[in-house]
Length: 175
Image 1 (cartoon, helix red, strand yellow):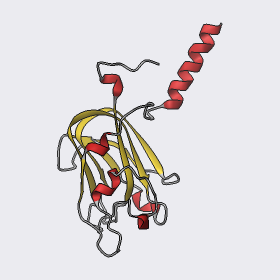
Image 2 (image 1 turned 180 degrees about the vertical axis):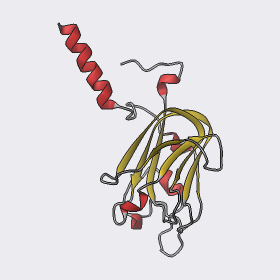
Image 3 (image 1 turned 90 degrees about the vertical axis):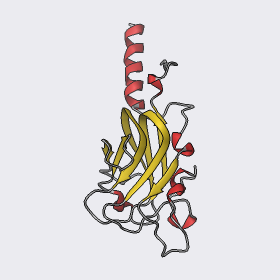
Image 4 (image 1 turned 180 degrees about the horizontal axis):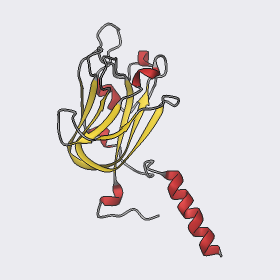
């Protein structure tokens, strides 16, 4: 009976963990190159694309660690990982000092096309939490982009983390 309960608990743990980054996982975004459709220039704080991969997840735009586009249709932010990876998960950190709802409908796309027209990993359907996790299940690509399709909108991201699917590497993760 102990073996059965152990298997049940292990299965529950695996479901609970979902696609959250495993301990020691490396955030691939930190070594990439970020770009976006435009830079918002009205504020004294500049929302450059690289701010989303600076390792600082402060959700207050005025603190200088978030991106901000100028409201182009469709707004986009893109990360070039410099080579293709199998991606397990992407975590977006949304702005919280104002207007987190702007990110609703944003798509996270992963693929090898630099034009942001890649397959969709997931869509932002809720902005109740500052961190939004997307399970990408090994989608392969060099580019990770966030696009708000179909409407002019300001796109603000305070951090983007991208994690490789470690189960596809030679060193399989064992649970």
